[in-house]
Image 1 (cartoon, rainbow, N blue to C red):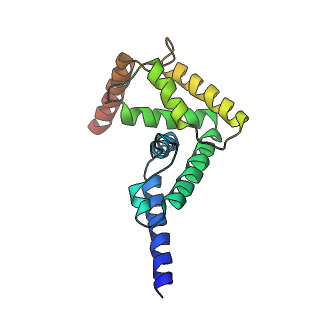
Image 2 (image 1 turned 60 degrees about the horizontal axis):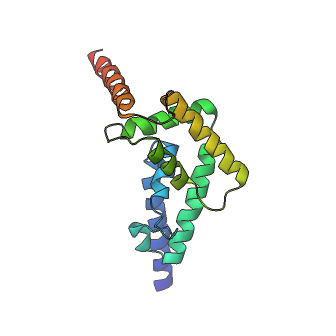
Image 3 (image 1 turned 30 degrees about the vertical axis):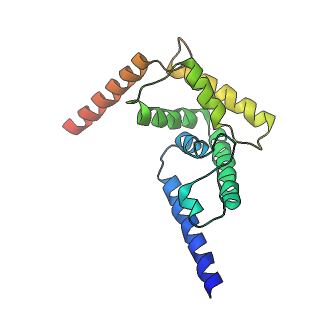
Amino acid sequence: MVRLDFELRRIHGLRLWEERLQRIDSVFARVVFVSQLRDAAGRYVDPFLLGVFTHRKCHQILADAHRHIFREWLGLSARVKLRDFQKYCDAICTRSVAGETTWKSLCRELIPSGISIDELNLFAGDARRLAHIICPSTGSPSHAQWRTRQERTNSRTMGDNDN
């Protein structure tokens, strides 16, 4: 009976974690979120999951989730990727935006282990194209470009409230 109770807690914990992940409305943001659960040694750790799983199982669950979400984003059409990426950008636009070096570093951190070279090349190409679409001059978001985007988003939102 104790074993069954333990298994039910694990299943419930995993479902709650998956629900938390699904509340993030951008697939790109989910990739960022899961990639940030990886420590300097490359091990995934999430305090919530560690409450019901061993370190090894927690790592396995998060590594699998990272690959799955990464591949989900790669599978999106170019148009959907752009909209999804813009959702992510809009969500972080009030923060201080870094330059090209930080942008490249972020992209490197997003890549999970266990993917193919083709997936890696596809991601690198997509990230480069998206950065150029959003910031055509440098290929990375500048603070001024992010502020302009935010002002446009705010003015559209304010205009919608007037109707």
